[in-house]
Length: 408
Image (tube, rainbow, N blue to C red; front, side, top):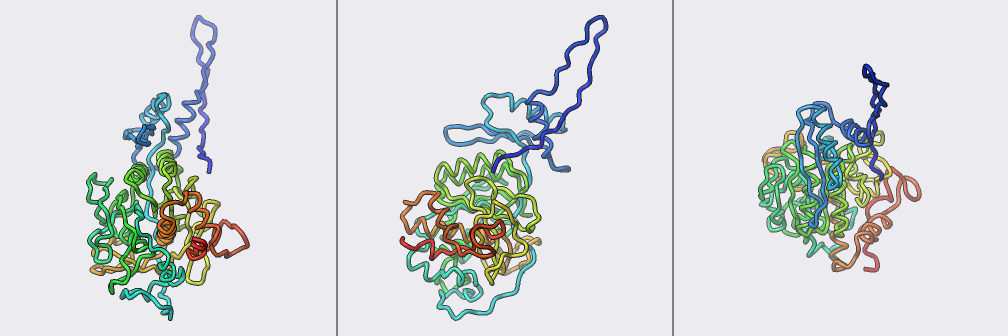
């Protein structure tokens, strides 16, 4: 999707110099106009953080400067735009977790033969996706999925041994601990241990999680942290990057990071957002090369909170999803303190199902599939719903991993 900017027109006034002919008045330069357009995306009340992207041999680099006023910010932007070494300039904008706070009711138990995990009967999504049958072919072994989120509780009983050493871009350390709960929930959907007689099973239980913390304990963060997290994950060898977060600004730094990951053959999956069909376009789901994921419900309908748009490629289970949780989750999440599991709704929960499906495909084909082929199989072989063919509500339909694996 093309990167659009709103260009502001600047009024100029003629200046007369005494004793001389009227001088020609210079209008705003293209740099002035571009700087004004970038500044127009600032969110009132938020810091004016100017982000300059430069391309290096090891990928995009992002530098930030916080301006004390609009005038200072415009000057910083103009200076960066004038530098021939600059690849892109933008402001940092806020992003947040894509979780809906209204939790749906539990589904009645299915008679399908399941894994022996104690809460497996609550995982309707694994029934819908025929997880146990899929595992006969692949469960994601040898694949690394980066969870770029609020961090991950690596010592959770259902995740211990599944989580690699990552990085915390909020506090600049290697712990990547989760102080919100959202990232741990996402990680469990992907890679919680199966058949351990405990809790839940992840959809790709043999895959590994690379935790990358870019959102704080409130579940919010900056696009520059997200961009750095994406680049870090790609450099660290992630095969899949899951982004269960969303914002409304098409930030240049995140787009550059996504391009870098895609060039390296990484499958990038992102939540479409939870504001319904009248919502603005959300990013990074809408960036080229990203698989944008909406949420489906137990009846194969599209969840009412799920965003619509041309950036929705596929939908996946996103209502009433039981997964792993930290002991003291954020008050913004409808989870009980002291519990190790929680039920959440949102495209945040749908996206990791698609990320796990990508891991299953990559593992099954021994990393031989290209990024574009993985994306094609996950979308083109979905179960069509809503209207025949593509539609902006459900994309190509509901994720169907068994069909994606046919012939492989």
